[in-house]
Image (tube, rainbow, N blue to C red; front, side, top):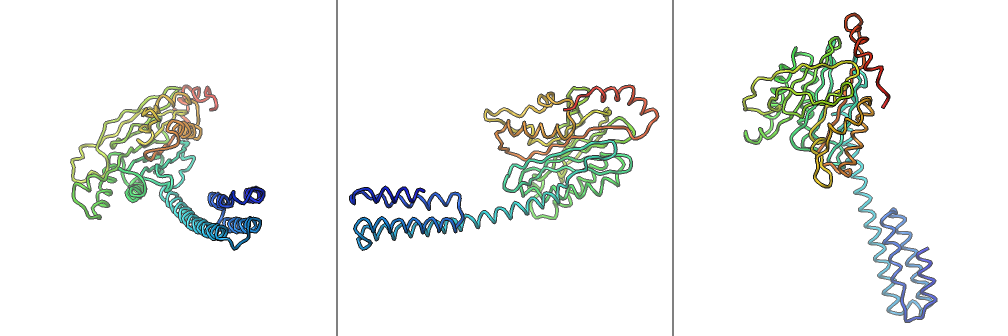
Length: 367
């Protein structure tokens, strides 16, 4: 339509007015949305229209018309070349995204929705949108009548942190079955990570710059408690009876601080009853800022959704975080919600469930 309009107007105007050069707009606009074939077709139509205009205004042999036709043809060819280069880069980007998504699925496999008495949901938001993968991690392991959970954050972000995240998750999946306590498990993970880092050349200072903050959580099936070992990571939030509280625990250095004194790691035990939800997260969530530089107020926002199940809670937090930041994250963020839904055996714990936790769950409204 643009080509026809310019051609008709140019034919109707006096020979002293030249609108033919405006025909270059058609192939130039086509580059923004069309393929190379479509751009070439529009360019050919524009050149044909320029020939028609020349025929009505003095013929093709005039120097002015010849230069306009040659210039329009050259610019149309350049537009086609731009399309070809753009399409090739788009295909390369699509392939990179496909590979990164496959790598993320292999690294961060979808967690089971149910493990024993637990209901689990998680999500991952990468700061590098093109890669869709980063250095935050989470994993679960079922060991007998208990569930162990790991969440961690590699120093740095993006593809450079993936190797260390993969090393820690692989070590956790194996070591979780061979250590009786969380402090012992944390020590094994620290040694494994240090061995991994020692394989790469670098000074001691450079190795010490590579560490992972982590939380280790253990939830027994038959006790209404949870155990937590803290390795330099933000504390989890407990949603219980409509109240949101931070779970304190004795701090310890992050994993992978090779060559430094690690001190004594301990575990903290706290009540975790049916209907309670634990929200574990990485610092990319609480350190996210809005346009005014305000940090994301996670604890205050969770108070809006005290009755939500894990899936809806994670989805609410994800949407609210993106709205807070305008959709742009400066750091990777992982969110993991764990709810105790039932006690597998009757008896004394069953009586507790009916007497207290059962009333708590029955009084909850759907999210």
